[in-house]
Length: 570
Image 1 (cartoon, rainbow, N blue to C red):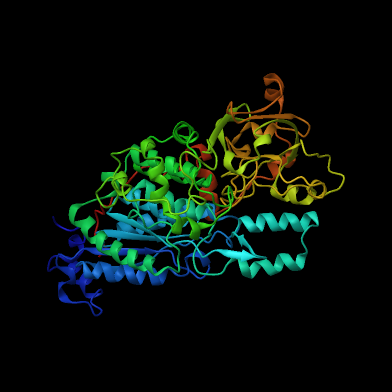
Image 2 (image 1 turned 45 degrees about the vertical axis):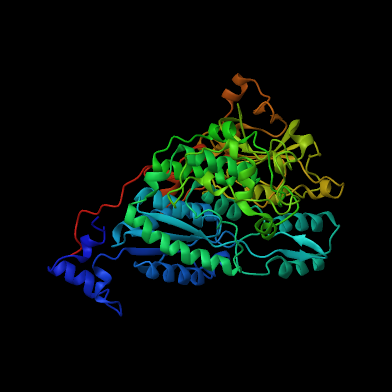
């Protein structure tokens, strides 16, 4: 097989001379003759703290590539840090995917190892790899070690939401709250709860894009470097047999990812990411597939925010493969992995070493805890809820809406002692969808009113067209589609309207007659809250982003463009 990189390096003309000469910086002559060129797409950045250690991981990948006869090539790519970038990292997921895709296509490479960790990095890398369709394999950066505070496990993200509410309720001092800060993040790595970073690493393995058994290895664990070395060698082998995403990722692969998402109690954010990745591959994955395949799957992993433990515990208890062995009958047996072998072949030797952390099928954490898809006159194109992170008594509820037109409106009024709200009210926040914010931020898990916290209330039904952190919890209906800014009915809800939630019946509605709803128009305050960028990426994004029910990708990025480049550079 002629390597793709030979299009650059073979020959004796001026262009091949240029391509080789500028790359001759200490490499041997045979680097350009038949040796696979393997890019290491690295999202390491000091401003993405969860990925800051990936340069060390890349060094191990590099050694593996070279050992297998390939030529490793560092390729820094756009890095998105969930905790720091404003207004939201999701605004740039599609940009990171587009930039990575274009760099993979434009350069003389034959395959790629994808290094990600923080929430949007693995999704953007997989979207890029799917679109360019070169041999590709993921090495997740791994979770940080367990944090502890006052003798108890302290999960990053989840602890923030819990402790900050206790401060607002007056049950935790500001001094103690700030003291927990250094206890929460005690090592390199991404969030140690079952947030989006952990979820996407594990789901990427279930999808088949990670070497089975690697995802979930803690970032400080030396076995991660060993796995990275092995993955570097595998990348060279994948080029030799032309094992590209388009050759092994199927509808069955996404079926397995959805089963895994449910069994681990994973983040709702995985829904929009998997829909976007499938869109790049031309695979017909819909929002309803998540309900059909995953909603009745038992949650087996007792991890925060739905449970008690953290990712280091999941790894020692047997990891993802032990979880998947318990639901093996629900998996697609033919779906392949980057190794060329079916995922299910790696489950034979998997064992649960701690049944407190990984529950057996017979004794699940939640009997049916997968993500549920809701529809109704409030969400004609769907909304999602995570029952495992919700309060059971609120999964069927009627309550009076208390409406906020923007996140700024919410923050200005939520703690007003005169706010007309009680424990049965439904908090409604709009203007937070892909177009409206823009970028669909993680604001749906709205903090509760201070006066209710002081009364002991710790959960309420909340409805929003945005997202929430995978580390968050509560009875939150989110990803409402169409969003308010795209003409969705959420824009028409008024304070005092009755909201009806029935998760078992898969309903989310506003109890307003259809003719009355049809007569309404959005308030000026609602429209004024929508994003209206004048230029740059935000303008492009708002003009072309799709809705949450199809993955919130850009409409012109769906599908694959392949790896071919027809024109020379000189």
